[in-house]
Length: 308
Ligand code: CP
Ligand code: NVA
Image 1 (tube, rainbow, N blue to C red):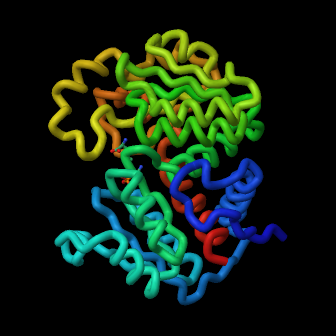
Image 2: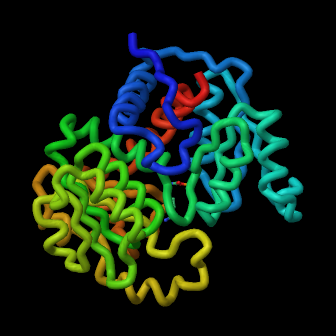
């Protein structure tokens, strides 16, 4: 029987907080949870959820994952706690980590998340920042693994804004040796430090391509992935970004240029008619709802490794 291993790092702030071996292990554990082949008890463990931004999937999948493990969650809404009144992170983190066994945090700045991790005595999990969305990437690669089995056969093309979701896909892709192509408008390339770190990990640097040319990026791809054009916190940029990203919609024409076996992924929530057409979203190639379900299995695996 496969038992969760304790991860070398206390926290999961970035996709790079696991080694390649640990990442494969989390994906295997997640599959076991999904197939109901594993029954790990985290009885009485409590996960605190601090969400400075909205969430459906991340919040609920963490709640259900903890409940399935026999633990529980506390929703620490920043607007009704002292966090919203400006209590310093270093104080909040020291208090909450005396009550909770782990904290999952969704916020804007990665540096704020790191500040929580610095002062918390318990594991801190990145539930999305402007820089990364590593829990999402776990579910994404679980979904790809189910479809293609061998990551060596996968070419993943992400079409859209090179921010949090794209950054974590790049870092996980580098650890797993998956070919990643990012197609984005000029000026919306992924974080340069993320690219640098990924290139240090990839054995073959040709496996990472950042381009503004959609057609080159899609040719031969097995996975087409997109995300909203305007992320949370960018509501004021919507009109501008809708124009800039205008040519970056996944539609049937684009899908026809990818590999025949290509699947479609989207982290959700989706804006049909913007980053993806309704036809493609609802097509038989879409694995979008498998991917959303996998958030729960992947996070159950992550929690079991961080808290066992
Ligand atoms: N994909 C994702 O993180 O969804 P939520 O914003 O609903 O959590
Ligand atoms: N890039 C998006 C991801 C949502 C899950 C955002 O940050 O809003």
